[in-house]
Image (cartoon, rainbow, N blue to C red; front, top):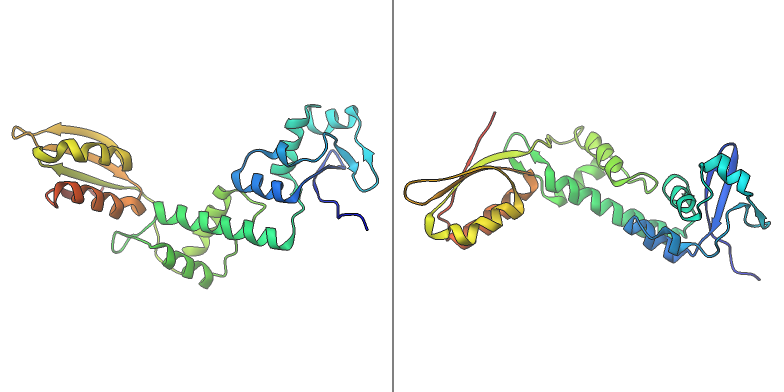
Length: 229
């Protein structure tokens, strides 16, 4: 019995175009969002890979606007359907779901408490909302749909938070880079005493991480004041 044939396919110009793939390499490429060409077994585009029916240059030019193989593979992987095993699809969905949760936790917060939503709370809320990741959609689209589902069950906002942070002069050297690493710095000024006052904007989910990092090097002497519109 011959080994099963795995393909990635897309419909264009009224026809189906296929490339033969290595499913493990295809999964790795999908997880990374790059390296699709390394997942293809043969440098051939088929109309029917099972029958060995190859697409002509005219077919490719009409459907893709190019005959460049790497460009066609990119289109097939990003716009079409990639055959994976059931176990691989589960791995892909699990990874994408974790990415969605991490992205929302990084930028979202509870508008009532002004506190970030922990990843576990987001996960449980998504389960309550009966939301499921769609591995055929991009991370950005999955985040958009997940936020829409979350708003049905928990108060959530994705506005960035603005703070004024005052760092005592003796700690500026250690804290300055940390603030710039975590936040977008809108302005910075020094007081006559040498303290640094910075106006920063930060995704809500990074607030606690920033506070902890700055307080660690300033021994809790930095002062954060939220600025609301």
